[in-house]
Image 1 (cartoon, one colour):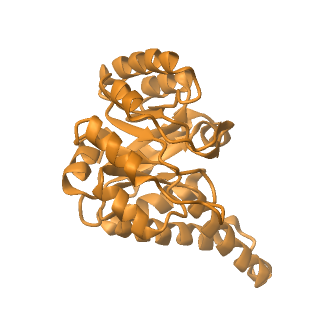
Image 2 (image 1 turned 135 degrees about the vertical axis):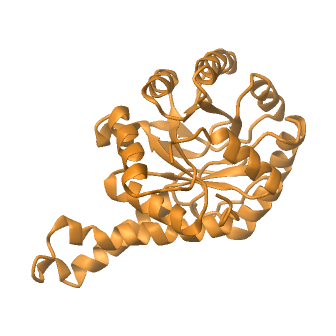
Image 3 (image 1 turned 90 degrees about the vertical axis):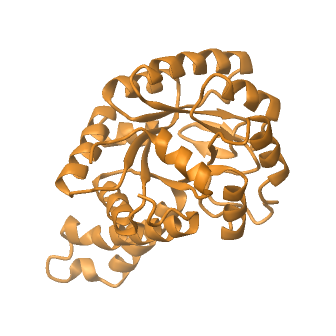
Length: 289
């Protein structure tokens, strides 16, 4: 199946009260792991590259070719969207031209009027090529490729202004953060989420960033209030590292040709696949392809 825009899959998720998992990739192994997990669960999926990950992998063109070619060679039949995560204005435009089927323009750190102006331009250029667009209002806590957010709550009125530009799905700060959640985290602000869902018309798919570490009960409540895309990255990193560490600490890299990277990276890759399948079940998108 060819790469698809995220618009249809997220609109279906919004109507069906489930969410599509958006999993960040960092290399070949993770990309394969995400695709295997989504195919096994018969679920639509979004594969995301941050600006930093894309640079690490060799550039946006490499990422695009990798995902597109793996879908073909692995015989993937579920819908897959390739998404730019937390892209600045220049990155969003570059990915639109290269062939990404979905982009996030993150102007949340800019003055609101500039965020609006650049978002409007990105949306126009993306929609001309059938590419879906995510924008952000109210920065998400933590750090993502140098963009640091304190985790403030988004202003529903600003969300309405961005939504009215024609954005396909909207990320809004509701107390969520990137990375691991601290012990004193107070949880998601469902009051803010409800206000945003109401003021944007009750049908616009909303996005939950910092999906790693949020209790499943809060995840499901957020979905019931309009969240249709949930980002997962840190948990994939954690299970990949833990499985790799276990393999080495057990001395398996020193047994026979256990040092072969194909063997060395296999436990971590399998762990990512299992996490993807589990999170897809959490999000309710199993069997929704």
